[in-house]
Amino acid sequence: MTSSRGGAAGSPAAARVAVVGGSGFIGRNLRAALDAAGVRTCSFTRQRPFMQGDRVHRALLRSHTVFYVAGGVTPARAEREPRLAAQDYWNLQLLLWGLRGTAHRPLVVLASSGGTVYDPDAGAPYREDAPTRPVTAYGTMKLAQERALVSAEWAAPVILRLANVYGPGQPAGAGFGVVPHWAAAVRAGRALTLIGRARRDYVHVADVCAALLAVHRRADRLRAAPGPTTLNVGSGVPTSLDELHRHFERAAGRALDVRREPARSFDRSDVWLDVTAARREIGWRARIGLADGLTGTLAAAGAPARMPS
Image (tube, rainbow, N blue to C red; front, side):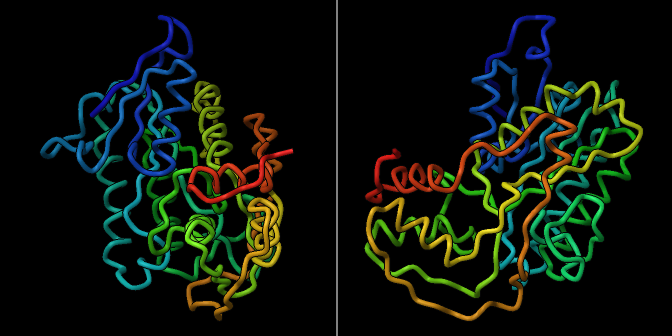
């Protein structure tokens, strides 16, 4: 477990915050955002697990806001190895059971999936009250996590259904999204692989962290809510792979070859999110457009990129 500096005593920034999954892509960026805001933070990772024997770490029992951004499985791997998806579910359940020992009611914020939990037949853009019907092992696990959190009466649940998160430093391993793979391809001078033709909602990791920070700043109000708070976090803009390709070309400042492949069995059809509720409830909206976001992502990957105008 690691800790970062805190704010002045008695200020909202001095409230203790825990990040479970602090070494992952979102977790690293969230820790940096919290630290920049002067928020005292403790972080848990695979190397520093939140469980100590059969109990959660005592720092978690003192935390007023717990961000759960951990995950050990991607959508593709969940289809191949459903036991890993089940393990992700049980990791959250262990945390929730452990938090029963808190003297207060912690706000638990779950990073869920706006791209996999909604019913494909409902049609995009999806609002938070749209029907849920995951058709993949990953989506099924994420919805099960949401339900476990809502059932934990000793915690105040906040569920953020994230769109396709991207940004500098995102790993390009199998199943980690199209943007890091394409950034690595640009750097290596390879053709971009276009799988299927569906439209997606891409949101920059800095915007995601801003949403998470906005939740923390409104923790007292959200904790007093009569029921769970569920919010979509995305750009609200559908982008096809062909459009994404053109954005990449503009960011790279040159033409990029493509190689097309058919959609995979676990790939969803068009998915983008209605993000009106996030603006209303936490005063948040995405601010980083794809043009600037991809320019920064390519530069961080060491790929040639145009300078933003």
